[in-house]
Amino acid sequence: MAEMINLNGRILPGNQASLTVGNRAFRYGDGLFESIRVFEGKMPFFDQHWQRLLEGMKLLKFEVPDSYSPAFFQQEIAQLTKQCGNWRVRLTIFRTEGGLYTPVSDMPEFLIEASALESSQFQLNENGLTIGTYDEMLLLSSNHPAIQSFKTCNALPLVLAGIYKKKQGWDECLLLNQLGRVACCGNANVFLVKNNVLHTPSLGEGCVAGTMRKLILELAMELEMQVVQSPVHLKEIGSADEIFLTNAIQGIRWVKTLQGFKKIFNNKLTASLVLALNDKIR
Image 1 (tube, one colour):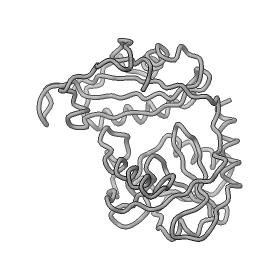
Image 2 (cartoon, rainbow, N blue to C red):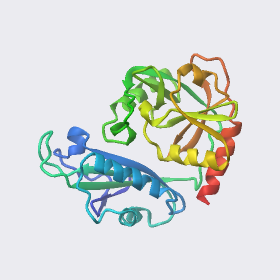
Image 3 (cartoon, rainbow, N blue to C red):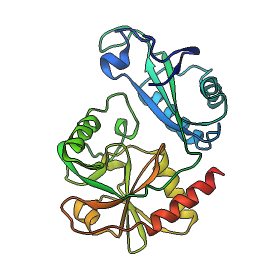
């Protein structure tokens, strides 16, 4: 739990009851959030988070106040981080309480939490991950990805996947869509390397439009790597040379084994991407 929180500009103890039972994020999942990494007080990738957050607020029909801007939220975050140190920040936007399914107001409120981190850069996991497949709840693919592209306050498929991986003793698990294709992992986008070509499920497959996913795609193009965004089948994952997972907080994590396949995956290209990503921070 964060020691202090920022609720609509008010700095409060993290263990103080601050939200009422009428909170719409609690009652209906009526909100969305961003997980943002702070490096030595700086947020080098904040623009990507702001762009997705703004698009998400518009999709959820919030009346976005004129005061909401990148500079505004950077200042509000700085009230907790003091613009120094390394932090994991969660910025949650939720609709003002009132109403049942139909809200009384479409004005948003915000909550910011900050938890300290030790490292000032991304670090590749020393031990490769063991992952499996979760198929008890399927994500929805769509030619017109919308809500599933954002990090909303309704994340039950990911919660259930987390419970399943814990029971299986895995580090992570792949989630499939209704067509049986790979969409993402519980808290990450999925990449695979095969014959020096970088593959990742397209956004229409049901995955979140991850900010780190976007950065890796841009970075791969800068490095003149061939990149393919398309449907990915489980057997393609199993025949890859490398598998890695990405999110905004952990950066890149490499996968060593996938349940059901005897292959041991390497991390040669994955390690080079971590170095290049840290160069971007600097």
